[in-house]
Image 1 (cartoon, rainbow, N blue to C red):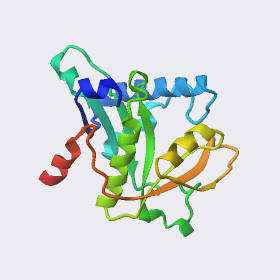
Image 2 (cartoon, rainbow, N blue to C red):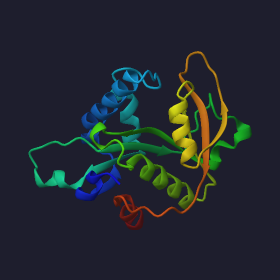
Image 3 (cartoon, one colour):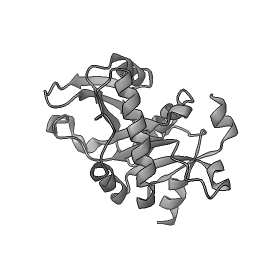
Image 4 (cartoon, rainbow, N blue to C red):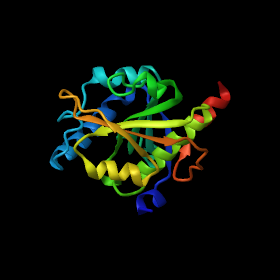
Length: 200
């Protein structure tokens, strides 16, 4: 495990409207890095607020925070990572035969470059997998770039199976993957959303 995760306590929480600038910055940085790698999954420059604000409003966007940032209230530290998890199956990719309602779907998974290689992406995938299990759903699903075998290999190595690739000319994404849900223990970060569910 990368030293960052050992020295910096991390916590997962739902994004709030005030988090929008930090999320946009994280996604823009990630999109720029992807473009530098020759990957065209996301638009260069990231996403406009009109794409992210609904995820915050629907309470399906989650942020991983470095808890040490709260020691310096004058510093607006961006999130360490972000992930959206919902039941929105993209109708251009997932058909009625896939039973779209049988899964949760991952979107906008990004880890800040200074934290790259720290295992946070793996931990968030495990958390999403456990969330699908808790919701009584058999699958965790995602789509990724059709022309990115490295990323597809990453998902395969983490228990996802390639379902098929949907090749639409107006979409760079379209490689569909799913993983059976399971109750995976999470030890890399504190899940603050658990307390939120208990108090609801």
